[in-house]
Length: 538
Image (tube, rainbow, N blue to C red; front, side, top):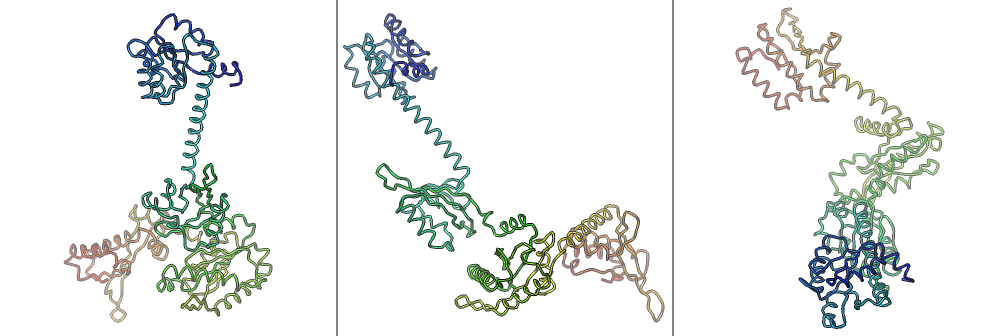
């Protein structure tokens, strides 16, 4: 403290516990203490002092030693059992020097002599206040650090390693993303989560920065979890140094940026920010066959090589600013229409020529030679990516190799809307018993007589219009109501046996016959109508 005024300004913020059994000494000293402390709690003996310490939030204790009930030292012992940090000053007479050694062991900060000498009092008090200030600063810093750590632990993936890269700490977020338990991580090298495809140059630069230069390193690292799934982290690694500038450990903070690094997410972002995108959607032909022949590591190599080849073979005058490798043998070139499609016919011709060039190329991966062939779906309409995907689906269905898929998404949306309406109509018809059977007579051309009846399903809509299966049956097969329709047809057809002595023919699909519950239904009806079952034709 620079002066008494500064000292008093600080002590006014503190609460003092003053313990003294002698009434005259207590009252005279209290007057002095109240000049410094705005809050003075007075106790008349050690027992009273201990009780009042427990009842109040005390910053400083000034106590006599020789008191009834329990003396000052005994009180200090009891106080230290519950608070080892509170500052304590002992007020003593010259003949009590034998207590000094014991009081030192109890962590007393200073001694005041009776009667109080103001110069000595100010000197001892200043030292005690300095300790209180430092203690409070440390508490505040510790609390802040604790809050910083809590915030960091909740928002970042945190780990610490020793100087050899062995993990000594991993927070819950690290455990969550890596899928390893803390027991599996602690004591292991960080290589346990490193993806093998990371370039060696990344780690050479990393260690040079943090170990040799003792500086912070930042970068993006591809890791893999316990199940082998990749994830990307933006990483900051700081070497922790001691007072002699020696590295004692490393701390790493990471943010999961897998979604940002995900090619599909990047593609969607690129299309969203594009004014008029054009998409060239490419797939390795018969990629499913490759999956049957090769393991994941080999497939990844093939896909990486194909990406490099697709970029390399792309003509200079067919400019695309980016290629996205989506996995499953699929790639997308993307750019603006005004850059790529100035003349639509020439643009399509260039892509078909490009497709032929790729088809004539052989990929060589070690002992594997693969004749590359690709199929291409192109779109540059309002729903570019969706249309290109639907175009790719059409190529796979029809076994074609090239398609311009403009408008495909809108067509599919219209089909989907119509299917939803049809499903709703089927649901209503089933609920209102408007799935009915027509029985068409089958006539022998020679005898001109009816030989049997064929059971035909019909649906009566809300306008009482009778619809043939063409309008609803295929859609029903895509939903959950197809088997319900079959059950109605079966019930109607077997009931009809009671109204005629002719055969009843029922048409069942392979889908019906493969369904166990339908087979159970058929056998139950045959048993129920066993007297007429011989007239059922399926």
